[in-house]
Structures are given as C-alpha cells and as structure tokens.
Length: 261
Image 1 (cartoon, rainbow, N blue to C red):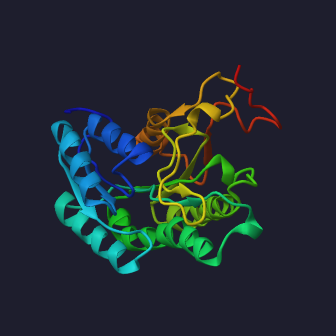
Image 2 (spheres, rainbow, N blue to C red):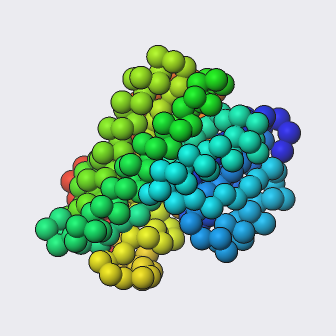
C-alpha cells in the first residue's frame, strides 16, 4: 500500500505467525510498512509469510523468544532485511492454566523466560536501531496483567511484569526518542495456542465458554491490531508509558462481564 500511515516504516513482530501477532503484521502491511515476523514453527511461519506477501514486503525468521541468542540473531536478520527498524512489537507469549501453587517450576520458568525475559532481550537488542530512527516499542500484555486471574496465575504475574517493563522503557527510552507502550487485550478469538495446562500439548478451544464483555462480544485479533496501529503511528507521538486495555470493558469494574445466554 502506498500512502498508509506507516508508509516506509519497518516493523518486527514477534510471535507473528498466528492470532494477534499475525493480525498486527497484516494491519501494518495494509498501512505501508515492511514487516518481519518471528515464531518457533517453520510451517506456520511459511504459511503466514505466503499469505501476507501479497500485501507488501514481509519475511519470516524462526526464533524462540526464550533463547537470547536467537533473539539477537533475529533482530539482526530483521534489520538486514528491512534496512532499519521503526517499530518493535513484543507479542510472543505463552501461558499455563494453573493456580500459582499448582504451577510446576519448569512451567513458571518457561512463562517468565518467554513473556518477560524474552521481551527484555528483544527490547535491548532492538533499542539501538529504534533510537537511530526515533521509533517505538509495543508490548502485548493482557488484561490479566492489570487484574490477575487465579486460573492463569503465573501468566498474570508475567503480564504485570511486562507492563512495568514497558513503563521503565518508556522513561529511559523516551528520553532518547523511543516510545514504549503496552496493549492489554481481554479474551481474544481464537485464543492463545500456548495457553496450556501443565504437561498438555494442545489447548482445547473454549471460546464459547468465555464471559461476554459489556460490549456484547469477545475480542478479535483485529481489535488489538487497530490499537497497535495507532500506537505505532505518528498519531500517538505524545503517547508513552500507557497500558491500553482492549477488552470491551471487562476491567471497567468488578464482575463487568456478562454470562452467556
């Protein structure tokens, strides 16, 4: 696309092969950006790349956010392909369906390694490139990081930490021309592929059991993508250090959600 609000911008979207990350990559391409997406699954990455290629310049780079060396290598490959970097979207994430005391240590470590340390490593690796072009960072947190959910306790802890990481980056980075903001989606179709019970390999689809937000529907990946587009654009040039809820009103008050009919 020529003339979009991200025309000529270069973006790296981690965890960009499915769900929210893929929707963000698509929306950025729609608005004129060139995009690199990362993920751990080669087949999903190839499928996403092939689908998105019709919209603009896009590349898939295999990388595990829990591996600092892979993070650094993926940033360098992205910058080489894009010729620089204007936007980092820290979207890669995993979760575990368990109370805090029922969460195995290895599951705790994995969630923290991907959701917090991975985002930290990407921010560190990308920062010099973002600073050179006065770019920005977006961190995909969760409404569970604003008000914790017992059923996904450690995920909630990790997303609260990610929001605070974004805030600290907003202070230090803002002084050097790099904005940092967090987006906090509520329940968003089709759900996270990597939100699993301990030891499980696949997440059962449970969208129909989710409570409805006050707006009367669950979220869509495109809802989050629109928020990301705004925060990545010059329209948000004075927006720094926010945690933007995209949840249909679920966190507007206690028991705001509506049971399904």
